[in-house]
Length: 333
Image (cartoon, rainbow, N blue to C red):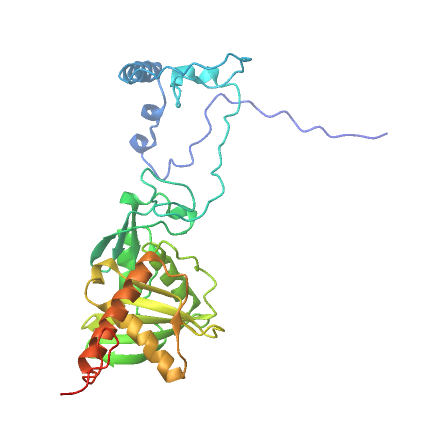
């Protein structure tokens, strides 16, 4: 015979379970009666909701369209239905994804278009707030920045979303000049040669910076085959970015310049002409003829036209007396 021992039944107590915080908190601190939702709280909330919805502007009437089969869905009178209309939402709302980015156009956007065509309208670069001209393919999370302002370190070119992040970065950033080798110095002006393979992140950020001011800039990430010549203006705080030009390390067509850009706040001071002249100086050192990559952009063609106009005028000033603009030989008197 098998015997089973049954435990005695537990006594059921009507007393509430002991509070585990009795030994830590006092009776007043343990009281949670004021945090529970009472019927009066629900009544006041409903009155406030009705009063707030009454202050909303009237809904925009829908445009007339061809009648079709009625399907349940959100109200057509408002893109954002009121709380009282929530019971009408019986179907899952449709999510509209952005279309595939098209070709870059002035004021266009790579990842959606803002009201005026620019996701980033202002670039905070050092002490300057610079209005951008074109949209650059920054990551999607940089589409909704406060005041549409992007913060960028003028020494290492790291870009950030807010003033707080830029301030923390400024305290930690040890860079005071571009990476690479300083190959030219004249007073406060220095030029650094930066290799796209050795300093890939810096060169990619430099291309993103230049895209905000160049319409036909197409190189952003494949920077390894290029050299970047960055011009800076040096003071007691460091070497401040002025402009740059890039060129291929090995060009079968002897191109000595691929892209050139001067910051808008540094323009109209002759720095673009200086960079063009420096590119020809490098070609002379390399024993090549050198020519810019074509076709030239509108701003590039204007810069080179001004450069060669000044170059010919300087040559005529120093040339012997037998040279004229008409190509006629004028004998010395």
